[in-house]
Structures are given as structure tokens and as C-alpha cells.
Length: 543
Image (cartoon, rainbow, N blue to C red; front, top):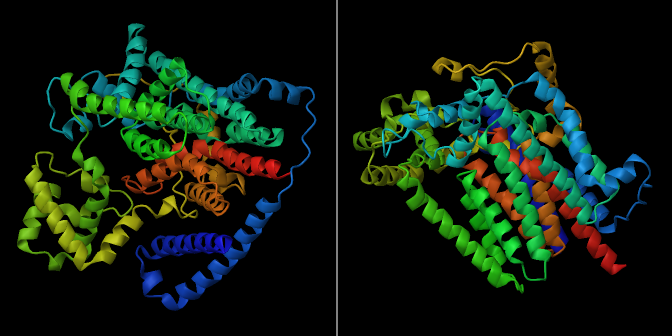
């Protein structure tokens, strides 16, 4: 009965994801679901039956899966098995090196360019979005301050030698080494938890040939280092749950440092930490007191950082608008499609927040930035309270409009056929407009080759699924419900951080934006390894 429930639930979710995705991809609304029900209902039932049969086969295969004979460890395979970190590090460095040469010194995009401007006290759009605590302090916490200082610090070092390129290249080397070490350590971790040599070779191969890893390693966006920290965080949760001995003082310090980095390198890191670590406090574990101590200490630091340290240095917090993509998109869609129903008072209240007259024209159903960009940074708490009253009342009148606004802005995160594939490779001229000298080398043919490879990769059979955001969420759901069916409740805690990242993506301003999903994509081979290890260990116990 339990197995049938999980099969039906997973089949239902996959089927409804397909229906919703088709509806927005083709019709830009839920009309396929509601108005063309004579097509959508039979199609849904067909999908449900096909998924149920396929998933039932996979469940049965995993229930009965027998261990294959291990590959004989000779020569290079023996070296890989004995020195997984060093071997993986060298292999990945060899594969990443051509990208480093082609895209010297770094692949800048707009966000890190603006962070560099902030570091050097130059006004830019992020200083305009907020009411600065001090007009002389341009740095805001829109982008994590620590990452801004790190990136700007490297550029400043380069400028000491009269070379912005040299500073950016030094940052690139630093970040590439961090990424390669993180991926190499994950291969080592897979060995620690008993994964076969075959699987570890496969994972290393994925890291080597998948272009997202070198491309993002060369891009100084905040998500890259955060993704590395996120992977180490999930591994630390695994060891914490499995460990029976008391943690030593050094281990406590290391964990606390890791948790701080998780909070400091991404503003939503606090959500990941609190929502995923809090359940650990309720496990019957001899180290529960230590877990509680680490949790309280980390949260206290975060509150001190936000409310004491940043204000002390006159650093402005991120704008309130960054948390309001969902309601702002809902209001914009409501104005676009139900403009005649909006009263004069409601218009005035919305106008105080989002500039009403141009709102319907600014509405982009898959990107909330055009709507948020006109947010009135001088709006008061009372203005926002009045806005939310109007927002609630309009949602009661047309809930489907609100639902469509949210789904249209997010469906690619759970629909695998929406390939809004994006990585950074183009030259970004923002810094040069402010007097900096940043430029690529003359190897344009090599950049063109790697860019072409990166662009076609998501369309390659099977391999393309490695970078498919919607499909990665399907795998996450599959693993979670299978473990739930097998009653591995404690092991489900290792999957919780990925679900929180998924929810962060749902609340994000852009549909199917790859760097928002990067933490989950980078973690997936390791998480799937934990999944396989959990099943394998129980079978060994039964035998």
C-alpha cells in the first residue's frame, strides 16, 4: 500500500508538471489545463499511467538491485582509488585549463562588475535601488558583502601592478582551485560512503566534460563559491547524522566556520541553514547538545552581523523588493488583465509602491526585474501594509491570475522541457565604461569553440539532462519519495537543503535561471551517491 501511494503521488506530480509546462510554454496561461480539458485530461491520464508503469519498474529494480562485480583496480584505476582527491584534482585541472586560457582573465557579467564598482565607491544601480545609510558607503548587502570585498580585493591587488586583468585572473585562479577541490573532495566522499569505482569514475567524467563547471568556475558570480560551500554543508550534515562520538573542539570550530560561510556568501543562506539544520535538533542523538549549541551560535552571529556589524560600517541592507518578486508579479499580471476592475484608491496605493501607469507594460511573465526596478525605495511601512491589503483583496477576486503569475515565473524549475540555458561567456563592457581596463585575449576562435560546445550541451541525448534544471528536480523528488517509501526518514534530512534551494528558485525573479539552481546541479551527483549508498547498506545488512 505504501509503495502504491508513493508511485501514484510521484506519477501525479510528474504528469501535472508536464501539463503545467505545456500550458505556459504554448498558451502563456493555464488555459490548456482548464479550457482545453477535453485534451488535457486524457493526456494527463495517459501520462499518469505511463509514469506509474515506468516508476514502478525503477522502484522494483532498486528493491532487487544486485551489486555488480567491482572493476579490477590496476594501473591508473588503482591510483584513482588510492588517491581520489589528488587524481581528480589533476584530471579536472587539465580539463579546465583550456577554458582558463581561452577566457583569460575571467568571464565577467553585470553583477560582479557592479560589485567591483561598489568596492571602489562608484555609484551604480544597486546603490540607487536602496536608501543608503551613508552616501559615502556605496557597498550594500544586495550582493553578499564578503564576496564583494573578496572580488574587489583581488582587483585592487591587480591594480597595484597596473592591471585589472591580473587581479581578475588571480581571483579566477582562486575560484577555480576552490571549485576543483570541492568536486574532487566529493569524489573522495563517495568512496568514503562505499560507492563503487564505476560510479566514482562516472561522476569524475561528468565533472570533466560538463561545460557548466569550468564556465562557472571562471565566472566571479556569488553563486559559484556558495555552491561549493553548499556541497560541503550537505556532506557535513551526513557526517553529523552518522557520527556517534562527541565532536572535538577543532571539529566544532570547523563546522561553525562552514556555517558562517554558508550565511555570508549568499543572503538566502540563512534560510538554507535554519530550515535544514533545525530538524537535526530533534533527532535522538548523543551529540544533540552540540548540535543545539552550533545552531544557536550560528543564528546569534547572523543576527549580530545583520543588526550590529553591517550597520556599524554603514552598509545598507538589501532592498525589501528582493523578497517580493512573487506578490509584485501577481499584482503586475492583475493590472495587465483586470485593469478595469481596479478602483482609483487601489491604483493610488499600488502606484506608491510600483509606479502604476507603466506597470502593465513593464510586466514580463518570466522575469520580475522590470516590475521591481520601479519599486519606490522611499515607500514606508504603512505604504507596504496598504499595498498588501490591496494585493490580498485582488487575489481573492482572481486567484487563478495570481496562480498563473507565479507559475509563469517559475515553471521551468520543475518542467524539464523548458531549456532557458544560460552561462556566461560574452564580453561584458560595464567596467570599461567606468575607466577600468578589462579585456579578453586574442584567442577568439577558442572562445567561440567552447561557447558553441556549451550552447549545444543541453541538447545532447542523455548528457544534456545533466544540466537540465527541471529534470534535476525530478530526480530529487524520485529519490525523496523512494526513501520515504523505504522508511529512511533520517536520511531524508540530507535532501532537505536541496528542496530549500528549489523554493529559493521559486521565489527568485527569473524563470529557469541556471545560476540560481547551480547549488543543486553541483550537488546532485553527490546526493545521488548518498541515495545509492543508503540502499546498498541496508541490503548488506539484510544479507
